[in-house]
Each structure stands twice: as structure tokens, then as C-alpha cells.
Amino acid sequence: MKEGSTEAPIRHPLAWREPEFLETDNIEAELTRVFDICHGCRRCFNLCDGFPRLFDLIDESKTGELDSVSPADYAPIVAACTLCDLCFMTKCPYVPPHDFDIDFPHLMLRARAAQFAAGKVGFWQRQLGQTDRNGRLAGSLAPLVNWASGCGNGLTRPLMESVVGIHREAEVPRFCARTLVAEAERQPLEINSEAPAAGRKVVLYATCFVNYSNTPVGLAARRVLAHNGVDIRVEHPGCCGMPQFEHGDLEAVAAKARRVAAALAPALDEGRDIVALTPSCALMMKFEWPMLLPDNTEIARLSQATFDICQYLVDIAANEGLASGLGSLDGGIAVHLACHARAQNMGPKAAEMLRLLPDTEISVIERCSGHGGSWGMMKENFEIALKVGRPVARQAAEAGRRWLASECPLAGAHVMQGIERLEAGEADGPDRAYHPIELMARAWGLDGKAQP
Image 1 (tube, rainbow, N blue to C red):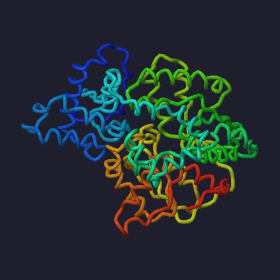
Image 2 (image 1 turned 180 degrees about the vertical axis):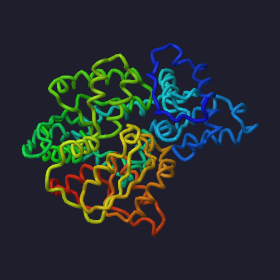
Image 3 (image 1 turned 120 degrees about the vertical axis):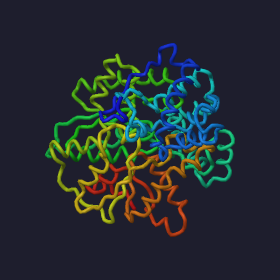
Image 4 (image 1 turned 60 degrees about the vertical axis):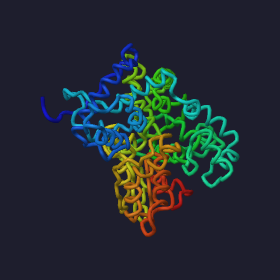
């Protein structure tokens, strides 16, 4: 047996339908095996809060070893995992094909699946995960909902904290009165037939977040792709299931995967690529769905045809070349690489894309923002999330760039909150965060609304 693996990591399909997958004794035995190996290694101490919790639990035990820790005390470690996959992709030397066969995120997912099956996921947690329903309802009352959910609202935010569990100071998504799908129908685009990539065809998978809460990201992506000759259709057949994945509701995730894959199959028949607008959704479609349903041919086909938006524009640049007219952005850009983009194992595509801008300095931040989807919004996690993300906030402020970009809009907003929390003199950073594709649209003169 080698001390550490030097081979490319592989992942096994999740045996979530096998009876032992949810058996408490089986799960506790595997948690104990993996935690003991983690205790002897500790390379992941500076990732999410799960590893410090594990190491503190062991260090403060009677023997200072895992043998004096009760499995009943494992729950806070499982709860702290944000399923970012960075330990698997960037740190752990014992992932398969190593004989230790460690997949820490999928083990945490398995433990959560058992908790979900036992009815231990709360009502409001489950309701927050109903993103399509929530987006439709909130969009119909967008001004009122945005007022009520604003961080400065001393009337409603304490109530949200006590009832729903969202920390009163956490930034939460705002909602748009019209969805991206509706905006795309209202704003037809002329395709640049003279561009080098003319002839490409895509479906922009709108994703819940962009479709309901951040339509400017999707509109910028449409303009950039159309300017580069790409024929675009915007679709949102439904949520990718990431919120249910975080809760361990694997049956719901599988159902969503089947539905979305079936809905997008005709686009694949037309020769269209699928481009996702948020990295979490691209990760689900490329990797997590095939792990859940390895025998589903529609999902396998969709997985191979799915791109992240930054990845797709870099692919155009590498193969056909970009349309003319791309300008620079004065003051430079600090770009944060989202964990779920890094976990796609495709390289730093947001940084590669922004480096296509002429005469524009790029600073790259490769560290977790600490947000972790809805995890970082909750009252028990918000301060921890800011602590985990403090190095990112400090790097963003100290980079001295005019622009801040993050592939994950939630992470970008969280980093901005972290910058605001820095000590006086440290927080001379940008005023807001953009998606990298918004900055590309601005550099082409396609989005005059973006202001620093």
C-alpha cells in the first residue's frame, strides 16, 4: 500500500438503494474508520469547519484518540460539511483508487440521508429547499419580499431568524419580478453570424438562482454568447436538486435528475450543448446525477454535454476564437473561484476567461468563501461561515482591484459581507461582487448597467 495516492481520483456510484446504506451501525462504523484516518493526517484542517470540529473532539477526549469518542458525538461534524468536495478534490491523499477508499463528502451525504430517512430534517429546512416553488411565489410579490428580507429590516429579519432560522444579518437572495426565461422571451437577440463560433447552439439552463433571483447574470450570458455567434435558447425544466442533496433527500434528487434530463433530451438531439449558469448546478448535472443514477442513459448523455458558462466561453476561445471588440477593464479584477467550480475538475475557467481581457490585471483567490449554499445563512452557522471566509475577504480587499468576481453569486455576496467585517484599514475593497460573465459582457460593451 502506498502512503498517498499519485493517481487521478475516481468516485464510486452511490449505493443509496442498498439496505445497508442507511443502517446506523454500518454508517457509524464507516464514520469511525474514516475519522481515525483523518485524525492521523489532518491535511484538511483549514477547509470547512467540519475538520476542526473533528480534531477538537478527539483532542479533548480522554485518551486524545478516537477510541474515547462516542459515535453519538459525530453529528456536529456531519452538520458542518458543506459538500463542497474540496477535501476530495484538492487535499485528501487517500481517495480512491487508494486502498483507504475515502470519500469524505459522500460519507457525510450518506449520514445525512440516514438522518433524513429518520425524519431529523426540520420543516423549515425542507421548505427553504423548495426553490422553484419559492421563486415563483416570491417573484409575484418581489418588491414586498425583497423589502421584508433585506438585512436592514429590523421588523422582519428577527422574526425570520426565530421562525425560519436564517441569521438576521445574513444576505439572502433577492427576487426578480420576471424570471430569466420570461426576460429572454421579451428580449430577442440578434445572433452575430460573422463571429468565429457562429453555428454553435446551446440551451442555457437557467438554474433556480439565476432564473428567479439574479436574471442579470443570465442576460449577460445571453448577450456574450449571441455576440459570439451562438444560437441560444433559455430553459428551466426544474431545480437540479442541490438543496435536497444537501439534506440527504436522495429520492427527490433522483426524481429531479430524471425529469430535467428528459426535458433537455430534445435539445441534445438538436445538437445543442447545455450551459449551466451556476457552478453548483453544473456540478450536479456533470457528476452527482451520474453517481446517483449510473444506469440512466439520458443522464449520462446530458452529463457529457454540460458546460459551466465560464468553461464554455473558454472552449470557444480555444477552438474558434472570440468575436472582435473585447476591451479591458480598468483597475483589474479579483476573481474568487467557487468550490463547486473547482470540484468540476476542469481547471480555473473563470480566471482563464477573464485573462482573455486585454491589459487587465487578474488576481485569483482559491479558497472557500465559507458560505456553503444555505448553510452559511443559518443562525447557528453564519458567524462560522464568516470566519471560514475571512481569508477570502482579506485577499479580495488587499488585492487592490476595482472589480470583484465570483462564479457563485451567493459566495460573492458573502465575501462582500466579510469585507465589511474586516478591521478598519483592511476593507478598501470593491463595492459589490459580479459574476465573471457580467464583466465579460461589460468588456464587450454589451452591458452598460454594470458599475463598480
